[in-house]
Image (cartoon, rainbow, N blue to C red):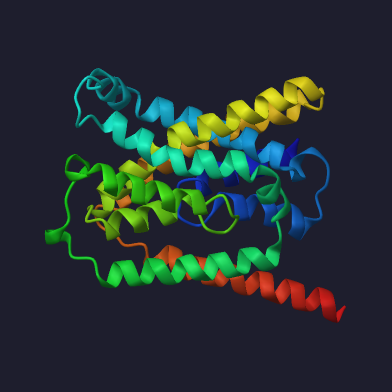
Length: 261
């Protein structure tokens, strides 16, 4: 149960911090040699359902406003749907592949690659030249959605790569983060529903562990959203890029020590 609580806290924080929640959910059990239900992609998806709850609660008023604009051709709903399609298709077609790439070596590569993209996007960033979500076009939403599809690989970070994509398309940093969080809602909902359907049919659920993880990730996720939306009004992605390099270094050192031992 303590393992579920720890992983719930980690998921709630890292789903929205641009450091890759999936990488941390793979690495923590790997570091501490945890096995069983907490070291499965099914438990990872359950924890993501907790952060989905956090998203729905935090943005409840915004979602109600968005849904009321559906009849309009420029409604944010259409941009979110278009942005969701790439990750949805890739997830459905290559589910087994992504379940198999939970490897620390791959995570080292993706952590470093996205860190470099973060640094490049921040060096090119000029606040006066960037806009809010209302200026986002359909092609911009598709571009960000394609970026989100890459986040199915552990270490990429869904929030990290979509915020970078948003900056590239001319969004302000805080607006890019807000669109990233809204875009995550249908993506996480879809993945949770598919995994729940499979679980119900298999009878593999350890309800106590799963419910604990979901509740903890929901609470910490809500706190993380509230913090980050304010953080990105004043600060850059650079600290997170450095943290990702640090984490990659820790993984390499751990692998080297394991081989040497």
